[in-house]
Image 1 (spheres, helix red, strand yellow):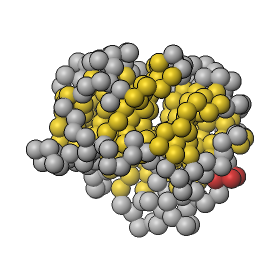
Image 2 (cartoon, one colour; image 1 turned 135 degrees about the horizontal axis):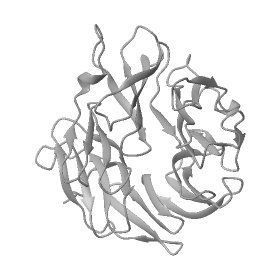
Image 3 (cartoon, rainbow, N blue to C red; image 1 turned 30 degrees about the vertical axis):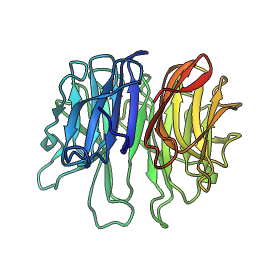
Image 4 (cartoon, rainbow, N blue to C red; image 1 turned 120 degrees about the vertical axis):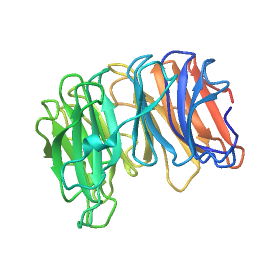
Length: 326
């Protein structure tokens, strides 16, 4: 079972009862550093399905009830094809080309069981986070093909739509490296740089998420922006002055955002029913929450620490009310 003292990295659910969570900082529990935990009762109790002694766990994505991928803290990719009963470590040598050193794997996104993309990096002589790569697979990760390379910037993540349009983001970790957004309209065959939101100036883009090929959001430590034309223009929203920690698109028009001011411990859950044009604050949470997942407009979970040192806490959204269940 999950200990009270740990850190949540990511959370997802495949139905109202079955969910998954990646965690780290488990050294007080049998010397394990990270793990993948599962719930079968909607988040009330959790038990381990994979434990790692050498690294923490990161992003996790289920494309259906059987197929999923996750990344560990050593930048390795793991996958399951049997609903998470077993997790297989990918052969990262498939990313190597002759004369190259090992890549560090970062953000990934799959649109079905076979097709996915992942960003990677390795140490370079340049100042801005090393060299960045985007790889593409059409067979569930058995083979990966290089689609994009830049020697001057880091790309921690990407997001793709089923229409072939998608975004990768990064930059801003250092003074000389501003925010960076790449866009593709052909499944990553070509990537072009887009103008980032002007208010993001010297800060990195934390993420991009989309309703469809036209309506999308970019967010960072300093706000939330939306586009209605595939990123040709990014417009400010009513919560652009806050740090946005996480976002979930739940329908063609509905979207949640967890945001707050960096100097305060309070996090605010916002919800929009019109693709981010207007936002309504749903509830405040006091503590280290930054991981959430929604199945639809009325069913969701928020995980993290309510307030130090109370430990691991889970809230569940049901019928427009957030209830503490752990």
